[in-house]
Length: 326
Image (tube, rainbow, N blue to C red; front, side, top):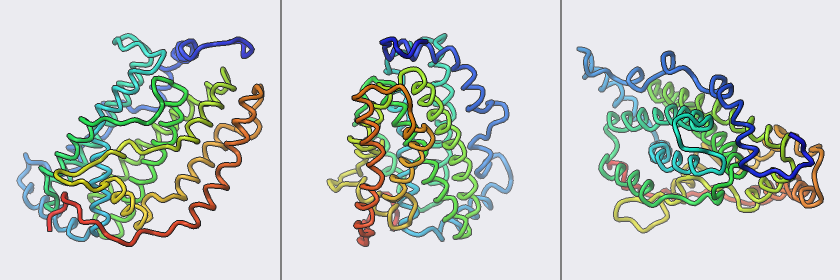
């Protein structure tokens, strides 16, 4: 495809769609060999089921309040998967029919992601520390309320978002796994580690999609990157709320993550720096004047964000979440 041509998002997506099957094979695992939630938690068909539940609950007692709160918030985010799938299906260039190449990727991604909410939900239920109806109400609120990540139906902005967000969820789940292991919770550490590994593969896939778009339509992709950085990447659970509560649940969840070091303002900056490096933004060729200005903004942003992050204080007030049993 000639870069000098004026091409539409739809044309780029249709062109990349020719390789989506290859990417699905590379970045998604075979269902026959992939892990399943039922393999990671007590099996109700076995005689030692009750003993294994006691082990899960004994280990869960050692989780700090903040760590349990972050785990629940992460699980609510994962459980809102129907919202995320419907958003990806609405992108320009995606034909929501069974034979469409992009739909193969979206369905495969959804199938892998679906296990995350399943396994974390089951863990919370077995842990004995969570008020499940209140947790479940928060999940229903998040799906019902929807979200606005400011990408519209634009695949360029959407893939910037998923590249960033999947990297962020990898960091969060990986650090929860490490903290769980440090507390002696081997069960939670293992399952969060597996979830984090999935997120890392998915992030790599979306970064690859963006790299390909930069090859085909560099100026428009650069402007989309700038636009998403100006708007800031908002978390999909930003409208999270608790049953009967009017407080900003997401802000309190974020404060707990910041206190633990699970996901911080510096992580945001480092993800952005990683994407700049991954996509070779500094030396990107074939940009028009508007895209050059967009590149200048992107390259200057990390230093500005670092200065802001350095001035931020770690939140000290611990919110009492309705999800957690006293």
